[in-house]
Image (tube, rainbow, N blue to C red; front, side, top):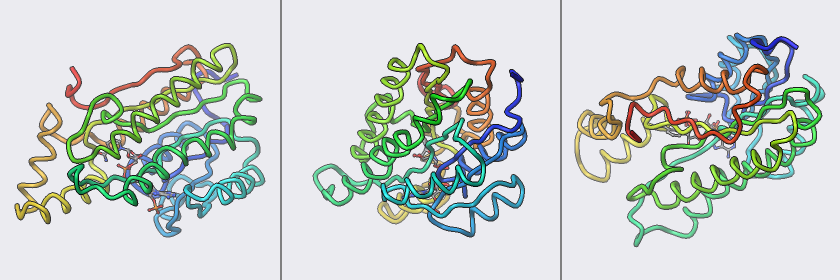
Length: 255
Ligand code: NDP
């Protein structure tokens, strides 16, 4: 087994068309992995695949039947799934007293229930691998409360609970299960948060962006490539004893 390479290993990434998912695709491809790239919109997935190669598979992860068929397509293209990166997610904000049940359901379905479904679909393959790897893209919102985003923080706390439980359950196998917990990252999701804050508060986009950027103690947004680099590290066969970790990458915010 090559301990510092993913040569020939099949990695499936959800939400691979943009942000952290696209950056993870680039890192894993650079280490030799064969990729299956999932998301709802084809165009960004194809843009990722242009540089990373791999199989583009359109899939809405809130549709459990579609996850099952999409994972089968991935297996047909690339063989058993040895690495699963559960990254697809959405964020919204609202004061709790105005939070609608539909918004709660939407966030939980995408960020948590879909993670269960993806892990469930892949677990048989992951356990057969000599070096199975499952990485959840959680958040600093997995570790503390977030005003105006109770649904998002609840979904991400749940995701970390899922990651830690699977890590404990499979600790005696060749599978590791870990989470990365980023602060605010320079991705389209953060751009959308800036636009939302600007719209709700009437502040300029620039002011809204610096307010969000300053939520990271570093005063700067995290580079998605840095998150991707940690994901790669967690996926290397060498790191079989990093299991159940919640790696914060947040410019010191959680210090
Ligand atoms: P992006 O919005 O760039 O990425 C999210 C990806 O998820 C998109 O490519 C989107 O593609 C995909 N996606 C969303 N819903 C679905 C769905 N139902 N089915 C399939 N794919 C879906 O933002 P980020 O890269 O920042 O987000 C990636 C992850 O990182 C998320 O889980 C997010 O919560 C987490 N995170 C982000 C932080 C940040 O500051 N940006 C901080 C901490 C965590 P498409 O729309 O085509 O489906």
